[in-house]
Image 1 (cartoon, rainbow, N blue to C red):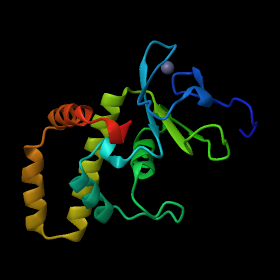
Image 2: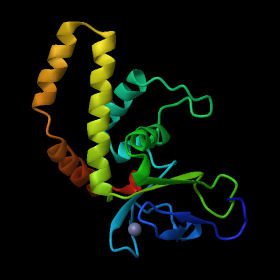
Image 3: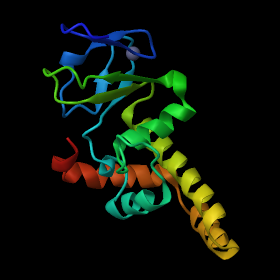
Image 4: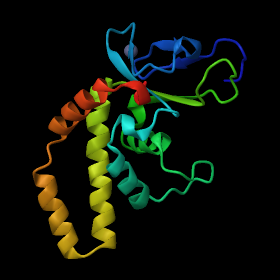
Length: 171
Ligand SMILES: [Zn+2]
């Protein structure tokens, strides 16, 4: 993994991609296998997927047990996805490679829209779990009622539209 040349990452579909071919603005990769795969880098902010207020809630709800990454961020989100879909996510550590601008990159079998939906679903589950442990039955009921009305696909659709109006911070 440490040859200083052009390191290649093997993707879940079996194709490989050169780390040097990935640029920081990439969100998706058109792969030789014919699919689009989501590309996420450690410096992409969590607001790529969630609005600020939700990121703040998550910071409070999710305890980070990592000394290297004490602050909640995109690596935690991708960690959650990898736990759930270990076979569908390829990850590369490029922190020793001075020629690329990222330290970590994740490429998933699914495209970036599907990844977004999966992340929202997993985070909703996580928050449900956190609330069920930490708070009153009433808070749980309220949360469940809110979630009954929460449409993941609609949220993702709207969020991506709004985000893409002002893509600067996300690309
Ligand atoms: Zn592929």
